[in-house]
Image (cartoon, rainbow, N blue to C red; front, top):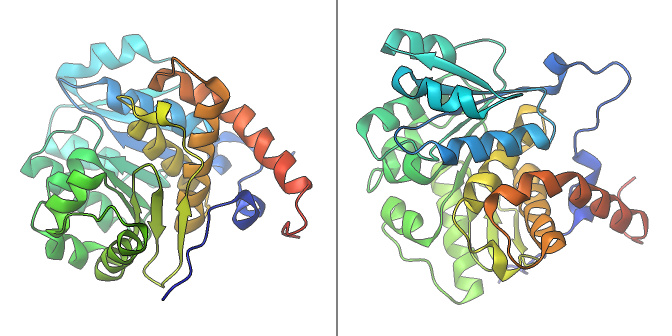
Length: 289
């Protein structure tokens, strides 16, 4: 039986992106997030998290009808409108983009599925969350055939069940095996959200994140988590470690806030969570060189 490994900053802190004196925004990664309509808040939460975790440029591709909503609510995040499939494809195929996120507020539609496949065809890292996962319900094989580059799936129990046809177990050891099987099947890193979030890679690596407080059970917190992962991938962090880091930092940010947490509070607490991570590693006897 595989031994459970608890997620801890010692495992990935040395891989966290760190700007230096030669850094500029184009070298710090470009995250592109698919925006939704009429649900617009989810993508905005994810984009703010991607930017706060360090992505040099963060943009949201938005249907033209929703552009005024996004543009009026965003400052450092760019809203990029499109009116036709060709214009949308141009945004996706921009060479400057280094990682994608699709799902938060995107809608459960064939259009969402096709946009996901377009992103996967770029060969760049893609994070699939929420509606992007459900758009492939009972079609995991179609998704598997399209994954040839770093890809992260971030389902909660319901999305996992719809995608893979298996209800996640409550018992942790079985839950780990189910997540590992899903990762092996798809070739993606699978992050199964829950009180104990399980992260598994296709090569057999797995960790369990258990520092999440119950206050994270609030609307939009999963969108923030997906944005953190995307921001780390955009900066070149490997997918498995990016998921482990994002899960821990997301939970630590919630712990730092305490009672009354809403999703909007999380991105602003990421710098403090990173400092806490650095302090823990500095005191650890197992710290990485």
